[in-house]
Image (cartoon, rainbow, N blue to C red; front, side):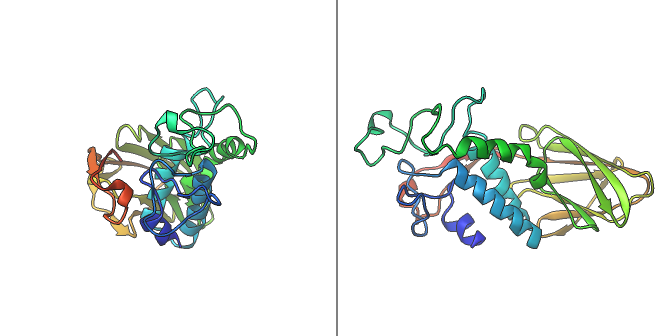
Length: 259
């Protein structure tokens, strides 16, 4: 199911649910830009689903999808002042077409102050308030970093309390510094997601460059000593992206993407 969503039924933004009829999926590669429903809540639901899939089977492509939806649908679903929202997130809008009694009546050319069914505003609030749940995961033996979001967390690894602090400029600059410490000695493993778009990866442990062991898109690092500093950087050049040829709405079109 998650593979089908990511590869045949998801917009480049991480939006899902291409039809207003039931706010639903239709058939594979049916991704119209101007009629898209792509509800903000649907991408939040995608994050919830992908998060649970990551707990079952950690895979960096699924975490990439979480990041894509967070940056491009969920954050943009709310204005910076927090007072207006997108319920529907189309990729193409001609304002004069978005009138009542048209097939684009559900599409709004600007964020709205409120909705009759106002599920999106509180869903955005609770998702952002629980962001740490999606950024980190711990199974008692491994601490996994799925999203590079500045902040900190604490985890119990093999019976030892471990503190992690993460400093990053992502998504604007592709670099992050992680500091791990423990009152006892560090133990267990750290798993760092390496995004699928990362080029020329450089990973340093306590200032020394290393070649990481990779597992399903994650760099796996053995923790040792009482504290460690791990720095991660890579190239993130802008690139042209093209849709699958079966997406008829995108024939002859491309998008410029970074990250």
